[in-house]
Image (tube, rainbow, N blue to C red; front, top):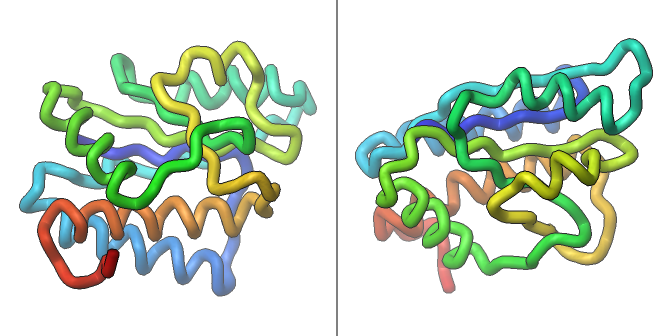
Length: 156
């Protein structure tokens, strides 16, 4: 299954970019044997200032057709790392070809887009900066692959 990261905003250089690149590289190596690959990273910016609705339009265009959609949102369900790994495995094992993981902009995701998601995931009741949420998501992808492979990275 190809995993796609769709995010509002561009992640420039710096420590966040280095962490994202590192965790995605690790995910690719660990996930390959599990049938999990990185389908790509799409960064969108609504230069017309259409707010969450304008961003939703761009995010939908970037999402692969037929992909299962999971969104990050503070109102979402908090999951343990093993639960996240199991959910990814279930999506893969159900024959899903693509999984799109979506991070909204500063004002969050458009409610209509959020309602289209199969899963709404929260990293806790605190609000996280966009760049850190992306790093945390990439780390969880790598962690999920190591959990599924039985590797030692995740110590529960």
